Length: 289
Image 1 (cartoon, helix red, strand yellow):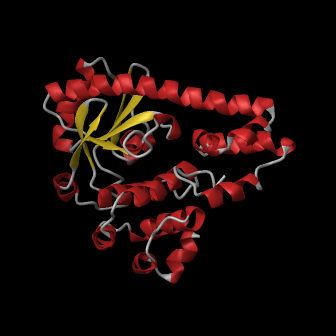
Image 2: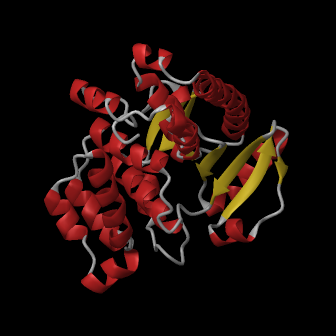
């Protein structure tokens, strides 16, 4: 699974993976793991055609279905996002796209390869009232806040059956005192679904993905580790700036753990000195283990 969970596996990795694919009895459990970790379409794309034919028919159909379902979900999400972005444009709100919606097309190129179930947007608290008015004008309805939403400081809406989470902070303020004003100044414009939407600069985006893993107490969902690996490989990260911001935001331990996982599991090209500079104390490492 690890060898095939990447956008551009090398010929050597593909050859090694061929010898590790499960036998007929193990395929059902293997496909379930792929679905749980959100990498089914990515692995399916990387399995050579000749080996697909050798797979049990039920699991082959299941993987093909997962790919179609991911695409159908993406198309529904695209329609909701276009409506939301158009309404926000009219209300003078510039959201910052986060996580899946900012990764699927710009980074993965094929939306089927990076499933995501909702639309995550960051809006400064001072612009939330305008963002809410925009979403409601597009037909969105506010959802009752859960304890998790209150803890993570985001508001939830439903538009066309799609969940939209409007974040007022990138992660919980109680855990990470992030300088949101500086972050906003460093955002860039990126066309997503025909609209110019804000996205985090590469270093802030990577930091956010690492901190997000930390807020989930490092529940290992391989899709999130794949995001880190592919972002690092596709972008030129200013590692010095990344380390400085990680420390300033109190997220160095989370970043160390996340980047170490990406490097260990997928060979992400994280410099050793970066991990050394981020590494927490021995006692903290024991707690994080």
